[in-house]
Image 1 (tube, rainbow, N blue to C red):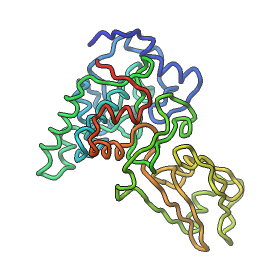
Image 2: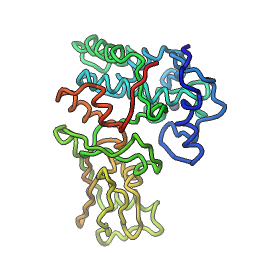
Image 3: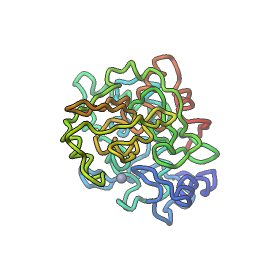
Image 4: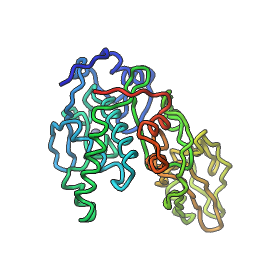
Length: 322
Ligand SMILES: [Zn+2]
């Protein structure tokens, strides 16, 4: 255990403020963090994890745990500086969540479910997804990225940064309040370069009119008229380019809502209807808030350091060390 030099209040602030104003963040929703906190002014350099694969609760040294997070959350083929940026982002995120247990698994600070807390892979599981020639090389590369940034995390006004990240964008990141209704000063919309160079940046999903109706009808007051193409308005867009709202068949939907209803990779889409089908053309992958991993990799290739990458994606942050 390490004594934390800053007062516990500042550590708890990122958790307390959202609770006070009822902010809603996904996954590790701040309002779901239970009081009282267990860590009384100390940040541990070990973390208690619930392995959802084995149901085992394990105490793992933070730096060891982070290698498994990198293995699950970012391609090991990425540039070293991008992996280092990811290590610091993940460490910051985890520290920001250390204050309390999660009501869904009070015995552990985090679980290994990427849709609930953070993805995590054991060395064995990570190696099983890589080609034989890459196994040892990649594990070493991830270990080195964590070691090279040992204990480093980001703060904003002495608060630990809740460092969200995602796979790729349509060229700009999103303001946090445009996705989750709560504003964080360090989660601002910024340009994200090199996104369009990645071959998977744009995806399309096409539905027949009846498939489209089947998914949308539960959200409409009356079923869609299948005799004609649905009416679709021009969307309102966020600063980051995602659909903020769009009217379909007389009802106004949020872009994030449609993303979830139709299983789109992101809320940055255009939608068009023909006589037979409705097609979504989608840019990027993920919620769009914080660091784009594809953009981080591009910046690394362009010669930027991990600190430059993080300072680009997280506005006005500073670096601290455990
Ligand atoms: Zn969890």
